[in-house]
Image (cartoon, rainbow over all chains, first blue to last red; front, side, top):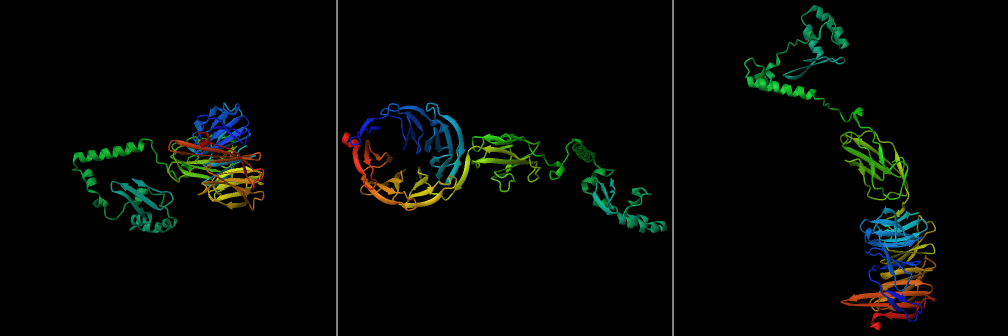
Length: 129
Length: 359
């Protein structure tokens, strides 16, 4: 669902786009990343903000617990393989695989050179750059 | 058949009767008894512990004890008896032939525990020594198989001395291993050894190493599991009983600052020193609670806002956007509100959209 909030007193549903699921939404530049909480990651273009359209999906990684995007790198925590996977999304139409680090976790935040992941086995700080 | 050891005063005699051991001293004394000449020589020969070299060994192997024929097995007796049945002799000949064939077949029994028979240290295949790897753990650690080795023992550690190996597997039956977990960031060292039988390990291979470009630098198994948010050098962890803050001043070792116990929250966001927490209630069903966390050691609640639906909250540029939805049978309800949070203690609704009004 895309809302036009330019007039905050009267938010307006501008449109809906099928095929986007998950709880987490991240707007990075002109791109929208959607997924997480047991859905796979999709990337949409916000070139026309009220009618986002799909650029890529990362269904090959399977469903993700959580994800974040920092400096054109997408970090996602996969459910099936229990690992942290990095993609270069500087070209969001063609996400490029960078690396995989085995670590089962369900939440992620990235700051500087480090990723912080938490799960049932506590916290892990990973060097990711 | 006589075996005459060089260093020990023992003679081994084998025959169809099996193996018999006799003390050379006893044999000597018996062979030389009754002879004055022999009696004179006996003492010096016994002192040396060696049989006299002037006589052939068999001269001393004339035991005076009763013959041992009576101890032969009935089968052997039946074979070597002059009146033996022809098939018994044939069977004995067959057995001897089999033994000879086996002995001449070239197969030798090498004691696997003998250091000379232990396999050499395997040579490494992958990862290449000194390589930088992106995936952690690597696809596998592999080495060249060593002869007929049946077991391999692999050690992997981030310490070049292998003082407390992270991986220590001595039950490997193939020359490779997939590691189940990521290795720590930095250099990883590994070595391997082989064995033909369990525990008869050969020498360790050389020490190999590879560099894990990405990997774990710190772990805390007691850290709360929860949604993470980051703002102003603080890591906010939203868990089932509230939220806690950790300082990232030392990014590798987050330090606990403080926290707040709260109702279970559907979601939380952390923005410019304030925590916006959408918590489950009974009446109203949801409430947006706002906490001042500019002092993360003592966060305090400064405001609240009731709402009927709660799924997500986002804060940006003095606005908070609340979204909620639920599905009951075939009817889907949704709600979106825009709040002014320029004064976080008193959030004000600016506008609202919901499916009911729309319908």
